[in-house]
Length: 101
Image 1 (cartoon, one colour):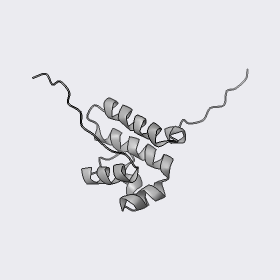
Image 2 (cartoon, rainbow, N blue to C red; image 1 turned 90 degrees about the vertical axis):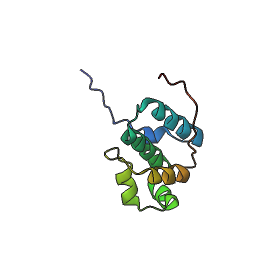
Image 3 (spheres, rainbow, N blue to C red; image 1 turned 180 degrees about the vertical axis):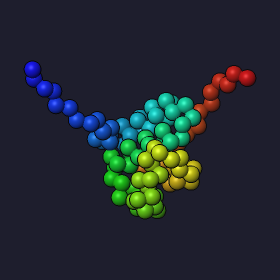
């Protein structure tokens, strides 16, 4: 029997362009269902794709604190999210949706 060799999938290896990064974040925002740690993890994936050291520098944060904030194990403050989004060259936007009351 032939053994199949597998490796762990890392989405950061597949986020090569700003458009791919924006599309990934948009998809994660749609799937998050209010889970802020999930969004933080998605931003961490994008930051790793861009280079965590440079993103930390651009966001005005230490590399270690950026890793912790975007690990998906905690919920970073909104100010941190905004700094990271800006450092990644991305923009958040709002869209009106129908709310059932």
